[in-house]
Amino acid sequence: MVVDKINIASPLCCVLPMYDSKHSSYATEEDSNDLNHATKHKRANAMLMNSASAHDLRCLQVEKEKQDPESPRGTIEACLNRCSISSSEDPPQNKEAIENADADVGCKNHRASSNWGKFFKLWKRRSVKRLSSFPPLSCAPVISKRNKNADPNVDDLNLHDIYDFQSSLHSFSINDLEIATDYFNPENIIGRGGYAEVYQGILPEGKLIAVKRLTKGTPDEQTAEFLSELGIIAHVDHPNTAKFIGCCTESGMYLVFRLSPLGSLGTLLHGPSKDKLTWSRRYKVALGTADGLMYLHEGCQRRIIHRDIKADNILLTEDFQPQICDFGLAKWLPKQLTHHNVSKFEGTFGYFAPEYFMHGIVDEKTDVFSFGVLLLELITGHAALDESQQSLVLWARPLLEKKEIKQLVDPSLGGEYDRDELNRLTSTASLCIEQSSLLRPRMSQVVELLSGQQGFVVTPREEKRKMMQRTYSEELLDSIEYNSTRHLRDLDHIREVALAS
Ligand SMILES: Nc1ncnc2c1ncn2[C@@H]1O[C@H](COP(=O)(O)OP(=O)(O)OP(=O)(O)O)[C@@H](O)[C@H]1O
Image 1 (cartoon, rainbow, N blue to C red):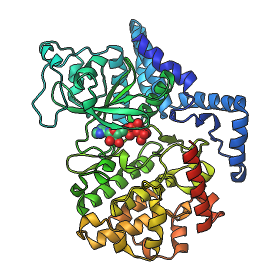
Image 2: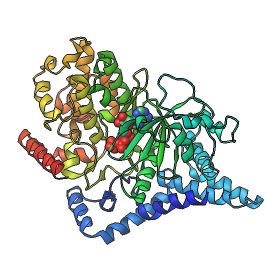
Image 3: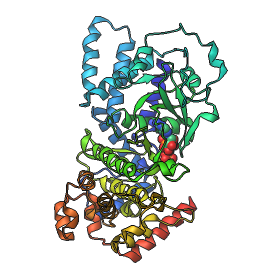
């Protein structure tokens, strides 16, 4: 479909220099690998001043990414190429070209690759399926009487693709989504973020969905945000990541996910249904989230840094299986890059690692810090920042150091917890929130620590240091040992920025 292609292709080339689009920071992103560490931050600032050269660099980077079939941009480009080839009349001599374009997608994640292919094909032949009926599910969203007139006999080929979420992505029409959500009835809103409203809905065959409708910003910004998240989630496939079903670009930008019936961990932990979060469920959430994050960091084709790990971005299935969602800020780091630099702070206060705030450094260890804050939330039941903007990390750290664990535990648990599991969670949390990223474990080590397989918690600091592989942020911070005064000053600074923004 020509309109779709224009919508997608143009921001790819002009509006969105990188798939990391929630940020306007791309013009200052520091991707050069051979730069001296000490000059990197200065260089980023200099690039800010010189937008022309930054733009040139980004253009070069964009071109490079387009050639790289494993990058989100490369994948989209390949699919778009394939679409333009196949949208012509597909004469026999073009068949080979189509096959080559298929191969060019080159994503080693087979499912993702075929999903993209299917997605773009479906996008071109938009489904106009109307819903036929709504099963009387107790948890079903509000459905308008307008749906009564839906024709049960109307069908088209594309409907079959909806039936199997596991193996296909679907291009929804706006009509599909309107009917599923009762015309975006406000009663069906189940979540609001900084960028989107999320509606619950139901598909004709009874599948419950969550429709993320991008609401913030200009159409170009929404397209950029949409492509950013799409470029990552379409490649992600793990039991502990949100299940992406498809999307819609008609009358706005929409991402469609399988509904997580319990909503987010944040809503549960800091809402009236907190009692549902028994200790064993909290422990399960900690383990599952660690697994999901390990997969993003170490199990994907490239390292994915989520950049916004927090309780509100952990969805829960009916059996309390956690699923990491909201990949709008996520960064897909090429292998050769030790880290990524940003100059605009995005994410959530209370979860920022010090090196991110101080130097704009993004790598796996910044996610590990946020995960440590999440563990503290699970243990204590406190929010990362309370109403008076007090930091959970600052409150909990002295108690962790003095091993006053009982004082940390959420009183609403009524003393019902497993001592060993609690010890594992607290000792892992204190490692994850180390000021120096060097002392934080990698997610694979976190998984071992949480499940009681690794014993390095008890080894001396120097030993731990040797056991962990260094990243750029580790090297930098190794030379800047934060003391508590410095840390407090940082936090004051963070607060100032937060209040000013
Ligand atoms: N699949 C889902 N099932 C159930 N609830 C969901 C689902 N996806 C999102 N939500 C709810 O909607 C909220 C907002 O979603 P999301 O974090 O994706 O939006 P956002 O605008 O990108 O948020 P942020 O401001 O954190 O960037 C979540 O915290 C959650 O409560």
